[in-house]
Image 1 (tube, rainbow, N blue to C red):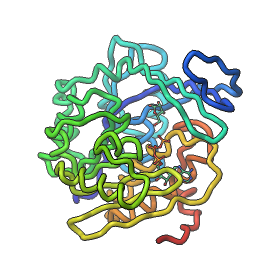
Image 2 (spheres, rainbow, N blue to C red):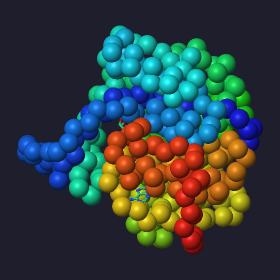
Image 3 (cartoon, rainbow, N blue to C red):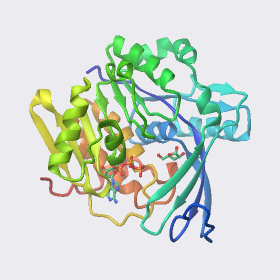
Amino acid sequence: MKKGKILVIGSSNTDMTVLTQRHPKPGETVLGGQFRMGAGGKGANQAVAAKRLGGDVAFVCKVGNDLFGDNAIHHYEEEGLDTSGILRSDAPSGVALITVDERGENAIVVASGANAEITAADIESIRSRIEEASILLLQLEIPVAAVQRAAEIAHGAGAYVILNPAPAQELPEALLRHISLIIPNHSEMYLLTGHDPIDDTSTDAALQTLHAKGIKDIILTLGSRGCVVDQPEQGTRVTIPAREVRAIDTTAAGDTFCGALCVALSEGKSLEEAARFATLASSLTVQRLGAQASIPFREEVEQLEPRPTT
Ligand code: ATP
Ligand code: RIB
């Protein structure tokens, strides 16, 4: 893989988060606790994670011509991201309504707004930026047509193309054939393969099903159960346990994992080494409230003692 530049193309949201003892059932109102507004969106979280953890990162998203959009761009500049490719729309900036229960589990509804306005033509207009990247990191909070175009261009230019297929949805073959590494969580893996990875047998079936769709490298993230790094061409499948920590809000755990992984890969680490670094980074995120508010910096990860591995 070429070392160097990481490009993240994806969503930018403002997160409105309420802590609650339990999530409401349909039709029910519950009285929650603390409210917080903060920067979020899977694309933005992953870009910020990669930057805080030491990457050379550019971020492309689409925000509205509104206060949330202005604030978001200002924030990304302060984070040190290359924001020169950020696009504007007349649609409102993306917003996510989040509840976090007492176990730290979240439930999220996204009003995509401007995120849903990113087109394949927009992606074509930033072709040269995509061709400069050595790693392209994508998620599914923007239209699949845009994701597919970006993957095609990057793959054609020899980049390592990583897809975090979140939120879960079915994916066209025409996209999958340009993906070098896919990083689904438990429920995304179930939707993509029909196999619920609850034990070794079903995990194996799920991984085989995804490989059969043409994807070589897979990292299946399993929350507090850690992750599985599967590289059949290398003949390796390694389970990396999560660190034992007290999770108070898992929002952006997966995003931190993806951003951290890209940084380690861009520094020439192996996929397994990168996943170990990502495991450390995301263990910090789950111990803090919020999305970007909870994403750690490089020094914090380097101070952690890695736990024994299987
Ligand atoms: P999110 O909650 O952000 O949607 P996700 O569902 O995309 O996350 P997970 O599989 O839940 O992704 O978590 C990604 C990684 O974060 C895990 O592989 C693990 O390393 C770490 N992680 C998640 N939850 C915990 C936890 N409770 N304790 C320690 N580490 C965790
Ligand atoms: O992955 C977490 C993110 O999902 C939140 O920041 C929220 O904006 C939603 O997009």
